[in-house]
Image 1 (cartoon, rainbow, N blue to C red):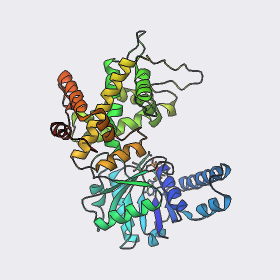
Image 2 (image 1 turned 90 degrees about the vertical axis):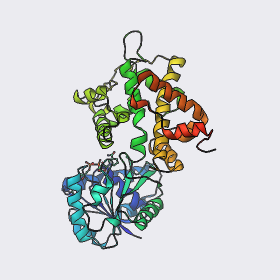
Image 3 (image 1 turned 30 degrees about the vertical axis):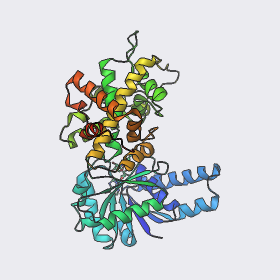
Length: 393
Ligand SMILES: NC(=O)c1ccc[n+]([C@@H]2O[C@H](COP(=O)([O-])OP(=O)(O)OC[C@H]3O[C@@H](n4cnc5c(N)ncnc54)[C@H](O)[C@@H]3O)[C@@H](O)[C@H]2O)c1
């Protein structure tokens, strides 16, 4: 079996180590902080005990998995690794420094990868003497439970590196998709309107209730009840953390040279500034205090359908544009959204069901109403409408 080294024993590093060790790989986890290494080790023991209790695995298997993972502050243990995955703080300078040091330790044929969510792989890879062995391997949180992994070659990455990385991650029973090295890769790019358009409708007061109560509960209701999404956008933002979700939005916006389609919302910025971070702070859009009363949505089907349609067409437009710009294949874009963020359907498949004419007309109606670049229709959808094509037809 090949050997994996993980740099960073935080949330993602610990999860990735569990995935590889479960698939039979020997793993070394490294961190500069010994307390974090101890915490990581203790959390893995806890997870394995829980899996045994629930009879998902037997004791012997759990002990074998734990026995395959070593914890160390010393990166010399990376010497024999076939693959190194970095999951440290999201800071380009620090990552580059770490990669420079790692390259001096590992073999010449060791593949070196980053789990970055928002930095460009090209910029991280540029720190290596041989960037052709470098690739992005982007897991979702929690790594042991989320099936999707985005594989992102940088411009410097050799084809064999991408192929080998994909084969290895596939062998860990993950679903891999290939994405171009552009901001947000697939999932964090295509999902932006789920939050952005909901926030926009909320700011416009579209769903406000007669009593003056803000309408986010109605938007959540519409997206769940009529759209089949597992969580409403405001529930999801509260779950992710309004600070984290805002930072991702702001980073994607800046990375796209301030394309208005990704413009962040003042509502979200103020929530974050006020410390209304969501579940973790006890209050976000919803109040999580014990006994707090949840606001009631306005269950108006016509209004609900308008809310769903507007968000859905913006999501479809984003997915179509990702395909238009060759960020990923049709199948990978649909897989990414159903397996990475649990959407009820692939967005391109959904576009076919609604009809390409419907998508173009809805986008054009929004554009006509607002005259904002944010609502520009993807050229791909327009072309497909003219040629009477569908994504899977
Ligand atoms: N948390 C998520 O939902 C998520 C999802 C996908 C990708 N990511 C990405 O994964 C990476 C890690 O995120 P996280 O949430 O696990 O962070 P985290 O804060 O939980 O863990 C980071 C760990 O790295 C350690 N570290 C910092 N500098 C180090 C160094 N020089 N050498 C070794 N260890 C060092 C820290 O001590 C810390 O334990 C980031 O790049 C993030 O963008 C995070």
